[in-house]
Image 1 (tube, rainbow, N blue to C red):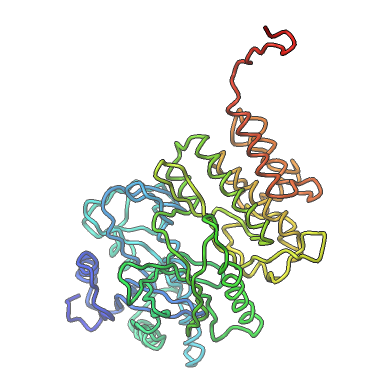
Image 2: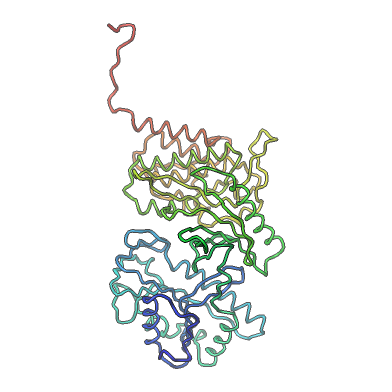
Length: 505
Protein backbone atom coordinates (compact mmCIF):
# COMPACT_ATOMS: atom_id res chain seq x y z
CA UNK A 1 0.00 0.00 0.00
CA UNK A 2 1.07 3.55 -0.69
CA UNK A 3 1.16 6.13 2.14
CA UNK A 4 -1.93 7.86 0.69
CA UNK A 5 -3.93 4.66 0.21
CA UNK A 6 -7.52 4.93 1.36
CA UNK A 7 -7.25 1.36 2.62
CA UNK A 8 -4.78 2.43 5.34
CA UNK A 9 -6.31 4.78 7.93
CA UNK A 10 -3.80 6.49 10.20
CA UNK A 11 -6.14 7.36 13.05
CA UNK A 12 -3.35 9.13 14.95
CA UNK A 13 0.19 9.82 13.70
CA UNK A 14 2.72 7.99 15.85
CA UNK A 15 5.06 10.19 17.88
CA UNK A 16 7.80 7.53 17.82
CA UNK A 17 10.18 7.17 14.88
CA UNK A 18 10.67 3.43 15.39
CA UNK A 19 6.91 2.81 15.52
CA UNK A 20 6.34 4.83 12.35
CA UNK A 21 9.05 2.73 10.67
CA UNK A 22 7.46 -0.54 11.81
CA UNK A 23 4.01 0.50 10.61
CA UNK A 24 5.44 1.69 7.29
CA UNK A 25 7.16 -1.67 6.80
CA UNK A 26 3.86 -3.52 7.20
CA UNK A 27 1.95 -1.04 5.03
CA UNK A 28 4.43 -1.35 2.15
CA UNK A 29 4.10 -5.14 2.24
CA UNK A 30 0.30 -5.22 2.27
CA UNK A 31 -1.39 -5.44 -1.16
CA UNK A 32 -3.37 -2.30 -2.07
CA UNK A 33 -6.38 -4.39 -3.07
CA UNK A 34 -9.40 -6.15 -1.64
CA UNK A 35 -9.90 -7.43 0.97
CA UNK A 36 -7.07 -5.59 2.76
CA UNK A 37 -7.78 -2.62 5.05
CA UNK A 38 -5.93 -1.30 8.09
CA UNK A 39 -6.21 1.21 10.96
CA UNK A 40 -3.18 2.34 12.95
CA UNK A 41 -2.83 3.94 16.40
CA UNK A 42 -6.33 4.23 17.78
CA UNK A 43 -8.19 3.94 21.06
CA UNK A 44 -11.38 2.05 21.78
CA UNK A 45 -13.49 1.72 24.89
CA UNK A 46 -14.60 -1.86 25.47
CA UNK A 47 -18.13 -2.77 26.49
CA UNK A 48 -16.95 -3.25 30.09
CA UNK A 49 -15.45 0.26 30.21
CA UNK A 50 -11.80 -0.67 29.73
CA UNK A 51 -9.75 1.71 27.59
CA UNK A 52 -7.28 0.17 25.13
CA UNK A 53 -4.71 1.47 22.67
CA UNK A 54 -4.24 -0.52 19.46
CA UNK A 55 -1.10 -0.22 17.32
CA UNK A 56 -2.54 -1.86 14.21
CA UNK A 57 -5.79 -3.53 13.13
CA UNK A 58 -5.84 -5.27 9.75
CA UNK A 59 -8.58 -6.91 7.71
CA UNK A 60 -6.88 -9.75 5.85
CA UNK A 61 -7.95 -12.77 3.88
CA UNK A 62 -8.58 -14.81 7.02
CA UNK A 63 -10.30 -12.17 9.16
CA UNK A 64 -9.40 -9.41 11.62
CA UNK A 65 -5.90 -9.14 13.07
CA UNK A 66 -4.83 -7.00 16.03
CA UNK A 67 -1.06 -6.49 15.94
CA UNK A 68 0.98 -5.19 18.87
CA UNK A 69 4.28 -3.63 17.71
CA UNK A 70 7.39 -4.00 19.87
CA UNK A 71 10.66 -2.35 18.84
CA UNK A 72 12.65 -4.30 21.40
CA UNK A 73 16.37 -4.42 20.76
CA UNK A 74 18.76 -6.88 22.33
CA UNK A 75 17.89 -10.32 23.67
CA UNK A 76 14.30 -11.48 24.13
CA UNK A 77 13.73 -14.81 25.81
CA UNK A 78 10.90 -16.43 27.71
CA UNK A 79 7.80 -18.59 27.53
CA UNK A 80 4.06 -18.29 27.19
CA UNK A 81 3.68 -16.30 30.42
CA UNK A 82 6.85 -14.31 31.07
CA UNK A 83 9.44 -12.77 28.78
CA UNK A 84 12.85 -11.36 29.67
CA UNK A 85 13.91 -8.33 27.64
CA UNK A 86 17.60 -7.63 28.19
CA UNK A 87 17.33 -9.40 31.54
CA UNK A 88 14.17 -7.61 32.75
CA UNK A 89 11.00 -9.71 33.24
CA UNK A 90 7.73 -8.60 31.65
CA UNK A 91 4.42 -10.32 30.99
CA UNK A 92 4.28 -11.87 27.53
CA UNK A 93 2.85 -8.93 25.49
CA UNK A 94 0.64 -11.27 23.51
CA UNK A 95 -1.44 -11.80 26.65
CA UNK A 96 -2.46 -8.13 26.71
CA UNK A 97 -2.91 -8.14 22.93
CA UNK A 98 -5.22 -11.15 23.26
CA UNK A 99 -7.21 -9.36 25.96
CA UNK A 100 -7.59 -6.35 23.65
CA UNK A 101 -8.63 -8.59 20.75
CA UNK A 102 -11.33 -10.36 22.73
CA UNK A 103 -12.78 -7.10 24.00
CA UNK A 104 -12.65 -5.51 20.56
CA UNK A 105 -14.58 -8.44 19.11
CA UNK A 106 -17.14 -8.15 21.91
CA UNK A 107 -17.54 -4.45 21.13
CA UNK A 108 -17.98 -5.18 17.42
CA UNK A 109 -20.63 -7.78 18.23
CA UNK A 110 -22.52 -5.23 20.33
CA UNK A 111 -22.37 -2.68 17.50
CA UNK A 112 -23.48 -5.26 14.92
CA UNK A 113 -26.42 -6.25 17.10
CA UNK A 114 -27.43 -2.62 17.73
CA UNK A 115 -27.31 -1.82 14.00
CA UNK A 116 -29.00 -5.04 12.95
CA UNK A 117 -26.07 -6.18 10.81
CA UNK A 118 -26.17 -9.78 9.66
CA UNK A 119 -23.40 -12.31 9.72
CA UNK A 120 -21.15 -13.39 12.60
CA UNK A 121 -18.28 -11.15 13.64
CA UNK A 122 -15.03 -13.04 13.02
CA UNK A 123 -12.49 -13.75 15.71
CA UNK A 124 -9.94 -10.99 16.19
CA UNK A 125 -6.55 -12.72 16.10
CA UNK A 126 -3.95 -11.20 18.44
CA UNK A 127 -0.26 -11.17 17.55
CA UNK A 128 2.99 -9.42 18.42
CA UNK A 129 5.34 -7.99 15.81
CA UNK A 130 9.01 -7.72 16.81
CA UNK A 131 10.34 -5.19 14.31
CA UNK A 132 13.79 -4.22 15.62
CA UNK A 133 16.33 -5.58 13.13
CA UNK A 134 18.97 -6.33 15.75
CA UNK A 135 16.64 -8.22 18.11
CA UNK A 136 17.90 -11.61 19.30
CA UNK A 137 14.91 -13.88 19.84
CA UNK A 138 15.29 -16.87 22.15
CA UNK A 139 11.67 -17.72 22.98
CA UNK A 140 10.53 -21.26 23.62
CA UNK A 141 7.72 -22.86 21.61
CA UNK A 142 4.95 -21.40 23.77
CA UNK A 143 6.64 -18.00 23.88
CA UNK A 144 6.83 -17.85 20.05
CA UNK A 145 3.11 -18.54 19.65
CA UNK A 146 1.51 -15.53 17.94
CA UNK A 147 4.84 -13.71 17.53
CA UNK A 148 6.06 -12.53 14.11
CA UNK A 149 8.89 -10.64 12.46
CA UNK A 150 8.90 -8.29 9.47
CA UNK A 151 9.02 -10.14 6.14
CA UNK A 152 12.59 -10.55 4.92
CA UNK A 153 14.13 -9.57 8.25
CA UNK A 154 14.87 -13.16 9.19
CA UNK A 155 14.43 -13.07 12.97
CA UNK A 156 15.27 -16.47 14.43
CA UNK A 157 12.39 -18.99 14.36
CA UNK A 158 9.74 -16.32 13.75
CA UNK A 159 7.23 -16.44 10.87
CA UNK A 160 6.68 -13.36 8.68
CA UNK A 161 3.86 -11.02 9.64
CA UNK A 162 2.41 -10.42 6.17
CA UNK A 163 3.13 -13.64 4.29
CA UNK A 164 2.32 -15.96 7.20
CA UNK A 165 -0.42 -13.97 8.93
CA UNK A 166 -2.07 -10.96 7.33
CA UNK A 167 -2.02 -12.23 3.73
CA UNK A 168 -2.26 -15.93 4.52
CA UNK A 169 -5.37 -17.70 3.20
CA UNK A 170 -8.02 -18.82 5.65
CA UNK A 171 -7.67 -22.44 6.74
CA UNK A 172 -11.45 -22.66 7.01
CA UNK A 173 -13.17 -21.39 3.87
CA UNK A 174 -16.09 -20.25 6.02
CA UNK A 175 -13.74 -17.62 7.49
CA UNK A 176 -12.58 -16.36 4.11
CA UNK A 177 -12.98 -12.58 3.78
CA UNK A 178 -13.92 -11.38 0.31
CA UNK A 179 -14.41 -7.81 -0.93
CA UNK A 180 -18.03 -7.54 0.20
CA UNK A 181 -17.27 -8.94 3.66
CA UNK A 182 -14.27 -6.62 4.01
CA UNK A 183 -16.40 -3.55 3.27
CA UNK A 184 -18.98 -4.72 5.81
CA UNK A 185 -16.31 -5.22 8.49
CA UNK A 186 -14.81 -1.81 7.74
CA UNK A 187 -18.18 -0.15 8.36
CA UNK A 188 -18.46 -2.10 11.60
CA UNK A 189 -15.00 -0.97 12.79
CA UNK A 190 -15.79 2.66 11.99
CA UNK A 191 -19.14 2.41 13.79
CA UNK A 192 -17.41 1.05 16.89
CA UNK A 193 -16.05 4.52 17.57
CA UNK A 194 -12.31 3.99 17.27
CA UNK A 195 -10.59 7.24 18.18
CA UNK A 196 -7.85 8.97 20.11
CA UNK A 197 -9.50 10.91 22.92
CA UNK A 198 -7.42 12.91 25.37
CA UNK A 199 -10.34 13.60 27.68
CA UNK A 200 -10.46 9.97 28.80
CA UNK A 201 -6.83 10.18 29.88
CA UNK A 202 -7.28 13.04 32.35
CA UNK A 203 -7.83 11.84 35.93
CA UNK A 204 -7.96 14.80 38.27
CA UNK A 205 -4.61 16.57 37.93
CA UNK A 206 -2.97 13.50 36.35
CA UNK A 207 -2.53 12.56 32.70
CA UNK A 208 -2.45 8.76 32.46
CA UNK A 209 -0.39 6.74 29.98
CA UNK A 210 -2.03 5.05 27.02
CA UNK A 211 -1.51 1.40 27.92
CA UNK A 212 -2.34 -0.06 31.34
CA UNK A 213 0.42 -1.12 33.73
CA UNK A 214 -1.75 -3.98 34.90
CA UNK A 215 -5.37 -5.00 34.96
CA UNK A 216 -7.62 -7.26 36.92
CA UNK A 217 -11.29 -8.00 37.55
CA UNK A 218 -13.06 -4.65 37.30
CA UNK A 219 -9.98 -2.40 37.22
CA UNK A 220 -7.00 -1.12 35.22
CA UNK A 221 -3.80 0.46 36.56
CA UNK A 222 -2.08 3.31 34.69
CA UNK A 223 0.90 5.53 35.30
CA UNK A 224 -0.30 9.08 35.87
CA UNK A 225 1.89 12.15 35.33
CA UNK A 226 1.03 15.33 37.24
CA UNK A 227 0.04 18.13 34.89
CA UNK A 228 1.31 20.90 37.19
CA UNK A 229 4.34 19.37 38.89
CA UNK A 230 6.90 17.87 36.53
CA UNK A 231 8.40 14.61 37.67
CA UNK A 232 5.51 13.67 39.99
CA UNK A 233 4.25 10.23 38.94
CA UNK A 234 1.45 8.23 40.54
CA UNK A 235 -0.17 4.86 40.01
CA UNK A 236 -3.83 5.32 39.09
CA UNK A 237 -6.29 2.48 39.53
CA UNK A 238 -9.51 3.05 37.60
CA UNK A 239 -12.43 0.92 38.71
CA UNK A 240 -14.50 0.33 35.60
CA UNK A 241 -18.24 0.85 35.68
CA UNK A 242 -19.55 0.09 32.19
CA UNK A 243 -22.92 1.11 30.80
CA UNK A 244 -24.19 -2.44 30.41
CA UNK A 245 -23.40 -3.39 34.01
CA UNK A 246 -26.23 -4.58 36.22
CA UNK A 247 -27.07 -2.51 39.27
CA UNK A 248 -25.48 -5.19 41.46
CA UNK A 249 -22.23 -5.29 39.43
CA UNK A 250 -22.05 -1.50 39.43
CA UNK A 251 -22.54 -1.36 43.20
CA UNK A 252 -19.88 -4.07 43.74
CA UNK A 253 -17.25 -2.14 41.76
CA UNK A 254 -18.07 1.18 43.43
CA UNK A 255 -17.84 -0.36 46.88
CA UNK A 256 -14.50 -1.99 46.01
CA UNK A 257 -13.03 1.39 45.00
CA UNK A 258 -14.30 3.19 48.08
CA UNK A 259 -13.22 0.31 50.31
CA UNK A 260 -9.64 0.25 49.03
CA UNK A 261 -9.26 4.02 49.46
CA UNK A 262 -10.92 4.16 52.88
CA UNK A 263 -8.92 1.25 54.26
CA UNK A 264 -5.54 2.47 53.01
CA UNK A 265 -5.78 6.26 53.28
CA UNK A 266 -4.61 6.48 56.87
CA UNK A 267 -2.20 3.51 56.81
CA UNK A 268 1.43 4.51 57.28
CA UNK A 269 3.63 1.46 56.74
CA UNK A 270 6.38 0.95 54.14
CA UNK A 271 5.03 -2.51 53.34
CA UNK A 272 1.51 -1.37 52.44
CA UNK A 273 0.68 0.63 49.31
CA UNK A 274 -0.65 4.05 50.40
CA UNK A 275 -3.66 5.65 48.73
CA UNK A 276 -3.25 9.42 48.33
CA UNK A 277 -6.42 10.49 46.49
CA UNK A 278 -9.85 9.42 45.27
CA UNK A 279 -11.16 10.87 42.01
CA UNK A 280 -14.56 10.49 40.36
CA UNK A 281 -14.04 9.84 36.65
CA UNK A 282 -16.42 9.23 33.76
CA UNK A 283 -15.06 5.68 33.32
CA UNK A 284 -15.45 4.93 37.04
CA UNK A 285 -13.96 5.90 40.40
CA UNK A 286 -10.16 6.14 40.50
CA UNK A 287 -7.85 5.52 43.46
CA UNK A 288 -4.45 7.24 43.23
CA UNK A 289 -1.42 5.60 44.86
CA UNK A 290 2.19 6.53 45.42
CA UNK A 291 4.45 5.03 42.75
CA UNK A 292 7.97 3.64 43.07
CA UNK A 293 9.49 2.77 39.66
CA UNK A 294 11.97 0.42 41.33
CA UNK A 295 9.26 -2.01 42.40
CA UNK A 296 8.92 -5.33 40.58
CA UNK A 297 6.07 -7.81 40.94
CA UNK A 298 7.18 -10.69 43.17
CA UNK A 299 6.87 -13.49 40.60
CA UNK A 300 8.81 -11.40 38.07
CA UNK A 301 11.45 -10.56 40.67
CA UNK A 302 12.01 -14.21 41.55
CA UNK A 303 12.23 -15.16 37.88
CA UNK A 304 14.82 -12.43 37.38
CA UNK A 305 16.83 -13.42 40.46
CA UNK A 306 17.04 -17.18 40.21
CA UNK A 307 20.39 -17.08 42.06
CA UNK A 308 18.88 -15.29 45.06
CA UNK A 309 20.47 -16.52 48.29
CA UNK A 310 18.48 -18.17 51.05
CA UNK A 311 19.18 -15.11 53.23
CA UNK A 312 17.52 -12.80 50.71
CA UNK A 313 14.61 -15.20 50.27
CA UNK A 314 14.15 -15.18 54.01
CA UNK A 315 14.19 -11.37 53.91
CA UNK A 316 11.22 -11.43 51.52
CA UNK A 317 9.20 -13.89 53.60
CA UNK A 318 10.08 -12.14 56.86
CA UNK A 319 9.20 -8.62 55.71
CA UNK A 320 5.96 -9.83 54.13
CA UNK A 321 4.97 -11.68 57.32
CA UNK A 322 5.84 -8.66 59.46
CA UNK A 323 3.77 -6.44 57.18
CA UNK A 324 0.74 -8.69 57.56
CA UNK A 325 1.28 -8.85 61.33
CA UNK A 326 1.17 -5.05 61.35
CA UNK A 327 -1.98 -5.02 59.21
CA UNK A 328 -3.73 -7.56 61.42
CA UNK A 329 -2.68 -5.57 64.48
CA UNK A 330 -4.72 -2.71 63.04
CA UNK A 331 -7.61 -5.08 62.23
CA UNK A 332 -6.90 -4.97 58.48
CA UNK A 333 -7.10 -8.23 56.49
CA UNK A 334 -6.26 -8.68 52.79
CA UNK A 335 -7.96 -12.05 52.05
CA UNK A 336 -6.46 -12.50 48.57
CA UNK A 337 -2.66 -12.55 49.01
CA UNK A 338 -0.70 -13.79 45.99
CA UNK A 339 2.56 -12.92 44.20
CA UNK A 340 0.53 -10.69 41.86
CA UNK A 341 -0.38 -8.41 44.78
CA UNK A 342 3.17 -8.15 46.19
CA UNK A 343 5.90 -5.91 44.80
CA UNK A 344 9.60 -6.03 45.64
CA UNK A 345 12.32 -3.41 45.60
CA UNK A 346 15.91 -3.66 46.79
CA UNK A 347 17.47 -1.31 49.32
CA UNK A 348 20.89 0.26 48.81
CA UNK A 349 22.59 -2.77 50.40
CA UNK A 350 20.71 -5.21 48.13
CA UNK A 351 18.11 -6.38 50.64
CA UNK A 352 14.65 -6.98 49.13
CA UNK A 353 11.68 -5.31 50.79
CA UNK A 354 8.04 -5.80 49.89
CA UNK A 355 4.91 -3.72 49.43
CA UNK A 356 1.42 -5.27 49.43
CA UNK A 357 -1.15 -3.98 46.94
CA UNK A 358 -4.67 -4.89 45.77
CA UNK A 359 -6.71 -4.39 48.93
CA UNK A 360 -10.04 -4.15 47.08
CA UNK A 361 -11.22 -7.39 48.73
CA UNK A 362 -9.98 -6.35 52.17
CA UNK A 363 -11.95 -5.74 55.34
CA UNK A 364 -11.49 -4.79 58.97
CA UNK A 365 -11.74 -7.30 61.79
CA UNK A 366 -14.69 -6.93 64.09
CA UNK A 367 -13.99 -5.51 67.54
CA UNK A 368 -17.18 -6.98 68.99
CA UNK A 369 -16.38 -10.65 68.53
CA UNK A 370 -13.79 -13.03 69.90
CA UNK A 371 -13.49 -14.56 66.42
CA UNK A 372 -11.62 -13.05 63.48
CA UNK A 373 -14.71 -12.07 61.53
CA UNK A 374 -14.56 -8.97 59.37
CA UNK A 375 -16.71 -5.96 58.66
CA UNK A 376 -16.91 -3.76 55.56
CA UNK A 377 -15.36 -6.46 53.38
CA UNK A 378 -16.86 -7.48 50.06
CA UNK A 379 -18.98 -10.62 49.81
CA UNK A 380 -18.28 -10.74 46.06
CA UNK A 381 -14.78 -12.19 46.38
CA UNK A 382 -14.82 -14.17 43.14
CA UNK A 383 -15.80 -11.15 41.05
CA UNK A 384 -12.83 -9.16 42.39
CA UNK A 385 -10.20 -11.93 42.43
CA UNK A 386 -7.42 -12.16 39.87
CA UNK A 387 -7.52 -15.64 38.26
CA UNK A 388 -3.72 -15.72 38.50
CA UNK A 389 -4.02 -15.84 42.30
CA UNK A 390 -5.85 -19.19 42.37
CA UNK A 391 -2.87 -21.31 43.46
CA UNK A 392 -2.37 -19.20 46.61
CA UNK A 393 -5.91 -18.98 47.99
CA UNK A 394 -7.13 -20.97 50.98
CA UNK A 395 -9.85 -23.45 50.00
CA UNK A 396 -12.45 -22.11 52.43
CA UNK A 397 -12.13 -18.64 50.91
CA UNK A 398 -13.29 -19.94 47.54
CA UNK A 399 -16.79 -20.73 48.76
CA UNK A 400 -17.32 -18.88 52.04
CA UNK A 401 -17.40 -15.04 51.98
CA UNK A 402 -17.45 -15.10 55.80
CA UNK A 403 -14.25 -17.15 56.13
CA UNK A 404 -11.78 -16.01 58.80
CA UNK A 405 -9.78 -13.21 57.16
CA UNK A 406 -6.65 -13.78 59.28
CA UNK A 407 -6.52 -17.47 58.42
CA UNK A 408 -6.97 -16.66 54.72
CA UNK A 409 -3.95 -14.35 54.94
CA UNK A 410 -1.91 -16.95 56.86
CA UNK A 411 -2.56 -19.51 54.13
CA UNK A 412 -1.46 -16.91 51.57
CA UNK A 413 1.74 -16.32 53.53
CA UNK A 414 2.51 -20.04 53.52
CA UNK A 415 1.77 -20.51 49.82
CA UNK A 416 3.85 -17.46 48.87
CA UNK A 417 6.69 -18.70 51.09
CA UNK A 418 6.53 -21.97 49.12
CA UNK A 419 7.16 -20.02 45.90
CA UNK A 420 9.92 -17.89 47.43
CA UNK A 421 11.81 -20.85 48.90
CA UNK A 422 11.42 -23.30 46.01
CA UNK A 423 11.10 -20.99 43.01
CA UNK A 424 8.01 -22.96 41.95
CA UNK A 425 4.31 -22.15 42.42
CA UNK A 426 2.55 -24.47 44.88
CA UNK A 427 0.00 -25.55 42.25
CA UNK A 428 -1.11 -24.98 38.66
CA UNK A 429 -4.50 -23.68 39.76
CA UNK A 430 -7.40 -24.27 42.13
CA UNK A 431 -8.04 -27.91 41.22
CA UNK A 432 -4.37 -28.85 41.50
CA UNK A 433 -4.10 -27.06 44.87
CA UNK A 434 -7.17 -28.85 46.24
CA UNK A 435 -5.72 -32.17 45.09
CA UNK A 436 -2.46 -31.52 46.94
CA UNK A 437 -4.29 -30.50 50.10
CA UNK A 438 -6.56 -33.55 50.01
CA UNK A 439 -3.51 -35.81 49.66
CA UNK A 440 -1.04 -34.18 52.06
CA UNK A 441 -3.30 -31.89 54.17
CA UNK A 442 -0.84 -29.04 53.51
CA UNK A 443 2.00 -28.01 51.21
CA UNK A 444 5.36 -29.78 51.54
CA UNK A 445 8.25 -27.70 50.14
CA UNK A 446 10.21 -30.94 49.79
CA UNK A 447 8.13 -31.66 46.67
CA UNK A 448 10.20 -29.01 44.87
CA UNK A 449 13.19 -28.51 47.18
CA UNK A 450 15.32 -31.46 48.16
CA UNK A 451 16.99 -31.23 51.56
CA UNK A 452 14.83 -28.36 52.83
CA UNK A 453 15.49 -27.58 56.52
CA UNK A 454 12.96 -29.03 58.95
CA UNK A 455 11.85 -25.62 60.19
CA UNK A 456 11.19 -24.49 56.60
CA UNK A 457 9.07 -27.57 55.97
CA UNK A 458 7.14 -26.96 59.20
CA UNK A 459 6.66 -23.24 58.52
CA UNK A 460 4.99 -23.74 55.15
CA UNK A 461 3.15 -26.96 55.97
CA UNK A 462 1.53 -25.64 59.14
CA UNK A 463 0.48 -22.36 57.49
CA UNK A 464 -1.15 -24.13 54.52
CA UNK A 465 -3.22 -26.71 56.33
CA UNK A 466 -6.51 -27.25 54.53
CA UNK A 467 -8.15 -27.81 57.92
CA UNK A 468 -8.42 -24.35 59.47
CA UNK A 469 -8.36 -25.83 62.99
CA UNK A 470 -4.83 -27.14 62.36
CA UNK A 471 -3.50 -24.06 60.53
CA UNK A 472 -1.09 -21.53 62.05
CA UNK A 473 -3.43 -19.15 63.85
CA UNK A 474 -1.92 -15.70 63.26
CA UNK A 475 0.64 -13.79 61.23
CA UNK A 476 2.52 -13.21 64.50
CA UNK A 477 2.88 -17.00 64.93
CA UNK A 478 4.10 -17.21 61.33
CA UNK A 479 6.74 -14.54 62.09
CA UNK A 480 7.94 -16.61 65.04
CA UNK A 481 8.19 -19.60 62.70
CA UNK A 482 10.39 -17.56 60.36
CA UNK A 483 12.60 -16.68 63.34
CA UNK A 484 12.92 -20.37 64.24
CA UNK A 485 13.91 -21.13 60.66
CA UNK A 486 16.51 -18.37 60.73
CA UNK A 487 17.88 -19.78 63.98
CA UNK A 488 18.14 -23.26 62.44
CA UNK A 489 19.97 -21.93 59.38
CA UNK A 490 22.45 -19.88 61.40
CA UNK A 491 23.16 -22.48 64.10
CA UNK A 492 26.81 -23.65 63.98
CA UNK A 493 27.37 -27.02 62.31
CA UNK A 494 29.43 -28.28 65.27
CA UNK A 495 28.13 -28.01 68.83
CA UNK A 496 29.98 -25.44 70.93
CA UNK A 497 31.57 -27.08 73.98
CA UNK A 498 30.47 -25.30 77.12
CA UNK A 499 31.69 -25.63 80.69
CA UNK A 500 29.18 -26.42 83.35
CA UNK A 501 28.96 -23.27 85.53
CA UNK A 502 29.26 -25.44 88.66
CA UNK A 503 32.62 -26.75 87.42
CA UNK A 504 33.98 -23.44 86.12
CA UNK A 505 37.31 -22.31 87.54
